Image (tube, rainbow, N blue to C red; front, side):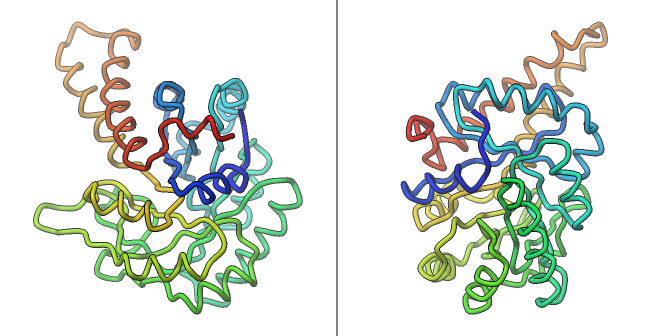
Length: 288
């Protein structure tokens, strides 16, 4: 069942759980994530970053949309970290049902103007819009858009209220201490859960946590209980997928994808299933 993000996250907000947004970068990853979501009866957000879109190509989106329509669980196809208005128009044209516009590195008024413009265009054709306020750290060069971890700018609650009112976004990515990528050894992630509580008490829309990979389970689980309704997971599933693939490819005689890829998908889905349980999303598809 294909849905837009606003309808999907409204149920999560009402029932206090988080929908996993898994970043995929090939067809095998996508079908694996769909399968584990159906097995666990979890709603799903398929997140695809502009770099991932350029890798898989626009033509694959038609197949992704078709599979989402036939899924037994609710599925949103989400353009992750769109950086320009033009990118959002591309997302609308090729079949996404939800978009994120990330103007967090712009001056505040420019972020408001860009996000409001995107919301006007996307809402006109039935897509939902996620904005971002504050900055999410970046821990390695392969991580998604962001800045150095030492430069995290936490979301200001007063500014967040103004931002939501003026832009009309359906959900908001907040900066409470996460970072994109995997944490290096010796760096301990720590979320400002008191800030999350204040943001949740003051904002009527679902809150989003980016950079959810590698954070302690207890901390992420607590964030979900305190009001996060969408958690982005990219690095954790990609590491599991490609590490297992490297192990399989150690056998030089293997050449067929239907021999090489299934073990990698299985490893990825073990991680995905754990995240689904952690976010209290298992069984929640029955609410839709």
